[in-house]
Amino acid sequence: MCYNKDVKRKTSNDIKGGDQTPERKYIMENTVKRITKAQKYEDIIALLSGNPAKFIDADGAVEFCKSEIALLAKKNSSDNKKPTATQEANAKYKALIMEFLAIQDAGKTCTEIAKGVPELGDFNNQKVAALMRQLVEAGQAHKATVKGKSVFTIA
Image 1 (cartoon, rainbow, N blue to C red):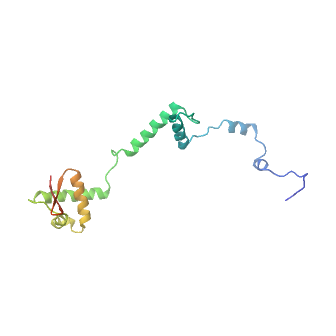
Image 2 (tube, rainbow, N blue to C red):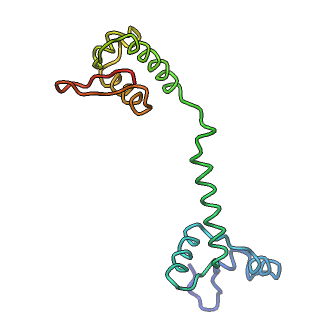
Image 3 (cartoon, rainbow, N blue to C red):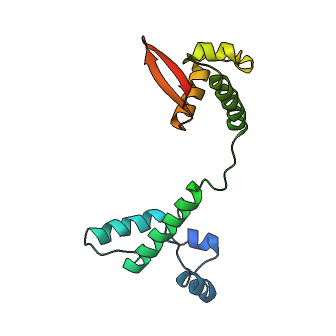
C-alpha cells in the first residue's frame, strides 16, 4: 500500500467505473422501488392509528387488503382439492364399518368393530376410534357411553 500523499488512492467509485454517467444517473433516479408487504402493513397500521403513511395512501391500503383477502380465499378454497390416498382408503373402511353396524342390534366398542370387520384386523383401537369419531362428526354414527366404555350404533 502506498502512503504517498501525491498518489491518488482508488475508491469504490473508481473501481466501479468512476463517476456515474448521465445515462446511469437517469436510470438510478427513475427506477421504481418496490414496496414490500411489510412496508404496506406498516402503512396500514399508521393509517389506522392516525399517523401519516410513508409508502401508500388509504386507497392503496384498501386495494392491498382486497388482494390479500382474495389470495387467502383462493388458497383456502376446498373446491379444487381432491382427497388424499389415505382419505380415500378411510372412506372405504368407514363404509365397511357402517355395513357392520347396520346388521348389529346393540352398540359395539372399537375392539368389537375391529374384530367384526375382517378388513380392520390390522388396525389398533386408536385407528378404529379415529374412524368412528369421523363417522360421529359426520352424523352417520351415534356414540354412547355404557359402564365407562364408548359404544357406537348407526345413527
